[in-house]
Amino acid sequence: MTTTDVPVTTKKDWSSDQEVRWCPGCGDYGILLAVQQLMPELGVAPENTVFVSGIGCSSRFPYYMNTYGVHGIHGRAPAIATGVAVARPDLDVWVVTGDGDGLSIGGNHLIHALRRNVNLTILLFNNRIYGLTKGQFSPTSELGKVTKSTPMGSIDPPFNPLMVALGAAATFVARTHDLDRQHMIETFRAAHAHNGASFVEIYQNCNVFNDGQFADVTKKNVRDEMLIDLVDGEPIVFGGERQRGVVMGSDGQLRLVDLADVSLEDVLVHDASRNDPSLAFALARLSTDDHSPTPFGVFRDVEGPEYATAVADQVLDASERRGPGDIEALLRSNGTWTV
Image (cartoon, rainbow, N blue to C red; front, side, top):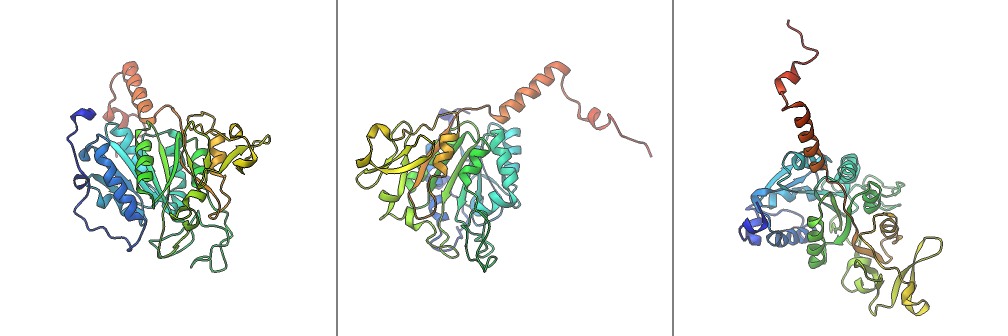
């Protein structure tokens, strides 16, 4: 089915009849609304779309989309979605996960889906806490985090989700946040357009168990000074008066500077299509904590062999060389006995 064959839809067509049940004020509502508003613009049909999730607050997502969906077991969403995408490459497959589901028990599945470059759009809701199980620390919780499971403070160094994705050689890596619907929509749109594994980290507020975790960066009254908007091909500048920027020193380290102290030509120009992931990796670790300027947008967007296509090509090649497969012959080929 081509884009022109897809009937026109509205947000209502993509919204299920299930009552949306998250805690009042949860950032998940904003993410859901952004996705439901975006889907009619993508030229895809609900009956050709699949949302796959694991376990956690974010993983209720498939219930609220009027599409096919799989509510899987803890951490296995990328593995299930890989099977769907390889078996049915004609389908539009999304993965919705959280920092606990995706980076703890599901970490292994996540990195392999990314390294294989399976054609999936992966949305990771990061609130740096376990919300569904009532407030334990997660793989992204900061050092010293006091929770029900770390009453003396967490001593685990936290994962940076973007660094994990880039370390797995993900071909599309981005970050957005739940307080800017338009930014989410445009980030999700870019992720969906990418052929291969797209990974989007979403700063998401858990107002019950970790309220205000990202407030020093994402609240509207501080965004100009704290949010670094990455635009491909443009100098990385920010601030209410565009008075600050990012430069790369002779040692390869990125630094924040006042533009009054440097020439604009010295400011780093963002290059999301750079094949070498080192620049994207440096930008991913630019912010030192939740109270310092933080980059948002598309960090990396490069082309690479897509997994389902490679599998299909290999199956076709095997069929041409050896003829069509015979499941019965395979099952009875070795190690069978008559008793």
